[in-house]
Every structure is written in C-alpha cells, then in structure tokens.
Image 1 (cartoon, rainbow, N blue to C red):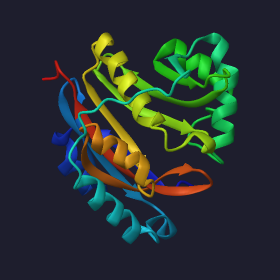
Image 2: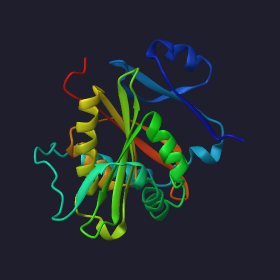
Image 3: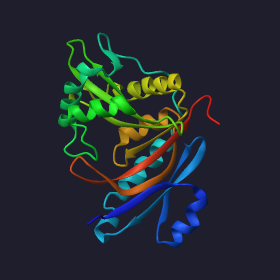
Length: 235
C-alpha cells in the first residue's frame, strides 16, 4: 500500500537505480563522510504525484533563494533560556510537538520515543520562556559514523512565532554539532513554509532539490525542500 519509496544512495549507483525505475529528486551534500548522496525515488500512486501547491512553493523558493545569508546572530528574548533536552524535559517536549503537529512521520509526541532517540543519536534542544513554559524546540538527528546530521523537528507555539525561535535553535544546534565534530548538515523543510525555508537560506544553507509528497505532516503529504550546509572542518 505504499505510495512512494525513496533512498539516499551513492551517485555511482544512480544509473542502475534509474534503470530500475527510480529517479533523482535531490542531493545531500557531504552525506557519506563528506561525499554527496543522491535521493532516489519511485512514486507508486498517481495521487501521490499531484502537486496542487507547486506554484506557491516555487514562488517561496525563488524568494528565499534570492536573499543573502544574514551575518547577524539570533538573540533570545529577555528571560528566555535554551538547553539541550534532559530527561526532565521530554514530557513537556512531547506535549509541545502534540500541540504543533496534527501528524508527523515519527512518534515525537511520545516522551518514551524522545528519550530513546536522545540516548542513541538525536540531540533535542528546547527553549523556555520567562515563566518556564516550553515554547519551541528542534533537533539534530546525527549519524556520527558518516559525519552528518539532519536538522529537523522544528516547532514553535503559535503565540511565540515571529520572535526568531527557529533560527536561534538552528544556530545553537549547529554549535552542538561543531562540538561533536559533525560537519555535514542538511534538512528537509516543508515547501509551503516560507518561514522555515527563509531560516535555512538566511543561515547559509543551499537548496539541492525538492522531494515530492515526501512526508505526512500536519495532516497530509507535503513536498519538502532539501537544504544543505557544510560547516568548518568539512572536507
């Protein structure tokens, strides 16, 4: 019953995968220990091919790619704090994700899942306001053996949007990855989210392709833009 199959492959395998019916949608810079990956896919459902919001998505992409990266770092509002999530944070973090997302590709609304993945390979970072309420979060899903991390799971309470939380979290997670020696960073951002795509463009990420109807998020399948960045020390 799957509508789409995709994989991150060595570009050397691209001709064989194309011969098997797959096509390239994007690349991920430095994914394999500094060497690029190509995202190959096959769509198995005609409905899954439909892109009713393509014009809107293309306009957003053109606009954000035309912006110069900003050199001004993000700043926390007075009284707000950020930290890498600890055991005591995961119940609140699951609740935050449940408020923000109607659906998600992974069970991030379950505290047990967050604890399990934090113990193995995911760095979650949270922001709390001056009252102690958790208002925003994001994560870096790391593959330390390959030296890459997906910057993902960005969520901000509606009442807190417009304050630069996503950029602040991204910059903080980039610092976490530098300290861990993980130089190759990427994300897949919802193509209809002007704000999130703007954040990555402003922080020096480069667009490398679009994944069609790739993730079931906030109630439906959505196109996702791939953005990549290699930090200092990357090959």
